[in-house]
Length: 205
Image (cartoon, rainbow, N blue to C red):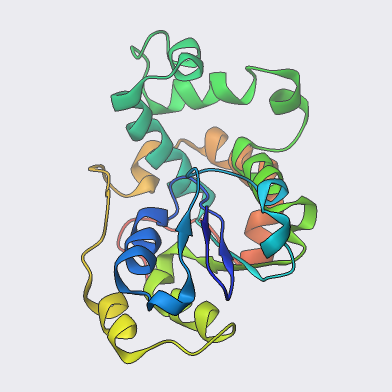
């Protein structure tokens, strides 16, 4: 989470947060009063001093988010991932099937990504202004401009800074079979409906 005098940025994992952090920490003017807290604090952790400010965040196509999560976990290997992936031996599809039934709340409730959004931004995303990672540079500029004036130097950095912390894997459509695709569509339906995401094959316009 990053506090500024104009807004609060809530860092949803695997949605371009490292790019936003670099922009704010390296290119914001001193009077923005940028302060970095723990990376993945939630809306409930916003200090009272900043609670009335807009909350900015980013979302991502759930199909792509799960692939990115899987390949990130292949490197970091936390306890939950080791449990659902047979200590890292299983491929993406088998790991995701285990993930969706690992706990009652996942088997019978919403998908992990949707639950993450509700947890970090609040049910219904109330009070949050959420951009799409697929349009990160444009949406970051727009969201900040809704809160304050964005200096020309900062806009230049948004346009030119290389992408940060990118994973090395193919287009998400390579990793799903029809059953898993339909499962994600059902479990994370609110994200697809609200942000207009849909299934796209590699190379689709």
